[in-house]
Image (cartoon, rainbow, N blue to C red; front, top):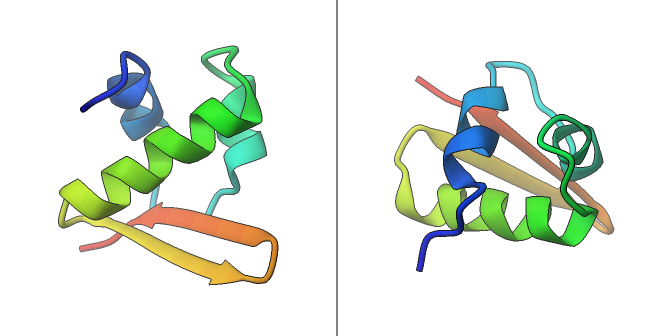
Length: 63
């Protein structure tokens, strides 16, 4: 199920990696909501990339 913030979060992704807390500042949502929307985008969209290193999650648009 897509969240209502997904389109806003998707527009904030660029080619450089961003963390969920950076994305959460723009649409004024919580860190957890931004992380969930980003994880859903990473699973459903082919151009969204994801990298996890411990507690750090990075997301970006790939080619």
